[in-house]
Length: 167
Length: 348
Image (tube, rainbow over all chains, first blue to last red; front, side, top):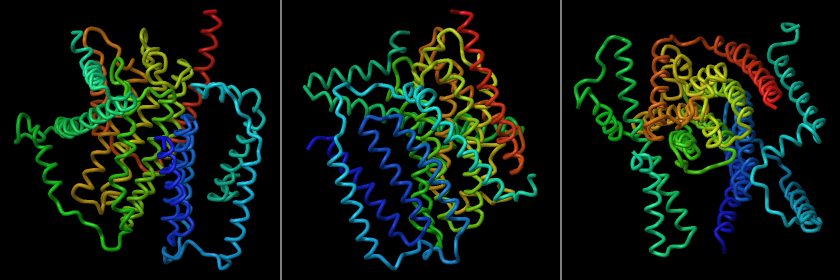
């Protein structure tokens, strides 16, 4: 087995282990921290694929921001006993059946998609290309995401401050 | 002078040649060289912490008109070593109701991103451990990891002061991350690259602090807030929060938080030197010596600011960040873009 394959399996084990822990942890705060570990593992996969920029973005956006927001949300809505905060569903067999079905579907999609194979080497720097695409070809989706985020920010301010105090 | 200039690159070259003679495979040689670089960086971090703790005490002493440490060694220099030995020999206390794993892991984890920052900083000519093409972006994303460990410490301690301190740290670090990133974007626009070595070599003739003075001021203020240093040291404001997130920590775990703060301080100053002060460029002296002279000068300014200005109030902190620094950095960004365009039209 080559070195990169060994590294891949280690990272995969970390991702899957922490992802399972996110679901099974009884304490919601622990679950949130396991989620941080999962995101970190995914960025490790990107590094392995030599997608440096994507790996860095993964850490900045998901680990840095989303995880912190999750933890904030969790802490502000806690109950008396932290050990019972991660609610469990009673229909675990139905859930397991659905998950297996979904996995089969994913597996089928991955193995049966005619992936486009290119002979060219991967570009050294992707930052410039991505930036150019965002401001030319993908400018409308880019702006739409911007507006979406702006609406979310305004909504958050109104939720915390109350509409009357602002207007 | 050439010997000094190439001291560290020659050591790496010597190790490489030695391994070549022993006919070790190429990938193993690369690993060994990387390992040597890591050892060098760790040594640098420990040495820096020793010097900085002493320096900070001396600077405070100077500002408050008292001698500072003066008993052990020349000008009290060995005081830090004595303190480190004392901290190492202390009992490792874990509060009974603490969230044990989060509490124990937080102190080592706070140190990890601090060390990772050093991987991409060019310390001198041809002296960079990993020449990453998204180096600058990497620095900021790694620095944003710091919030996670502060949350772990604040939550894990099960103490209201720790939790309040942790929340304040996170709120402050998230808010000031935005002006920090925006201020640096101006430099990136001028250079057209995120590679720190490229940014340094673009400053061969003129330092970017002359072109982007406003960006540097914003960077300096936001970086002070990111480091949780005075006047932005609310997360550990003694008068309100006992010691913030550090309340329940003692002995070596407490020292790790302290060590991480100084490691981050050096990294932030090094990044500022790379971005605004021409990196390792300078006449006569070897490049890495110039780099450290600039870094230590900047750290001295950080210390003067910390001990001169009183702590800012928590709501003022947020107002200042969101209503003043962010708009200012956006204006700076627009003006930089216009300036680049004018320069291009005039030049071409």
